[in-house]
Image (cartoon, rainbow, N blue to C red; front, side, top):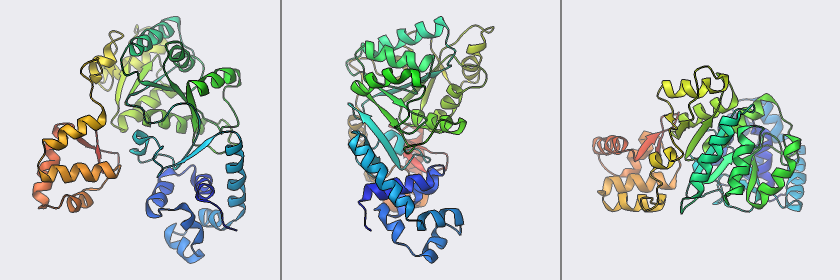
Length: 371
């Protein structure tokens, strides 16, 4: 039986959901996810390096039936299924090496806003943390181009950020640690309904997935990956918010932290990041907008920035920009080839562009655009 490509994409997601790098490699190798399921067992053994678990899963047609049922269910519920090759897929997240191949989304806003800020922190938020969270979001709401506020729908800082954003007329997106059929935590179900009307819900977990420690960690990397900047408001020495902030650093995102007294348990994580110079200190509600250059009258969209840089560049830099605009991450040898010039000249241009903050590298050492 033949299925449409969305079904095959969901099947890949079900099989490789906890191994996003392999799923990403398959998505890059095969333009259509259905091609994977047309391979012979011998071809699968070569592709999957003899991993019998994955080979058996691909060969098992029950996976496709489950994926087909999931697609039918999602469409009936008004849930969009976004494949990593789709235009609607969050471009910031696509830059990340462990980005999921499929996202389930229900909402009223796009996932590629001009600006996006993730706000995370402890579930045991204090009045200080909640008040400062609201003050910062109120300041962001005063910008002519309001950023999308992203968080995880959890108790404490997460839900404070979502509610403050909606009260200020901003869009907000909640990333779930479960399938779209299970809102977690259950008491926030009504908030989730409101968020759908003024933002949206996102998850990479298939229908039926339940909350477990590992799903929260995987949820956090989507929160970090979809953002331009991550704001940590209150965190103990260990916690999900701190993990999200460190994940954001690995993605070359800007990280900000709200300081607290040295005796405050739920400021220890923030104070530690600030002391290590891995997070910028929040000293006023305008700290993020000042650091990001988002103050009205000074902001240029990503497209406008790239256009300005392109116009001022020589042909080598222009080819580098074109190559990196077309692909989210490129290894050095491929980029040298696409630049179409002497390797030494290309490497010199890349070094200059890194110094200027135009390009950077991901955790695998591949080149990415930082603009």
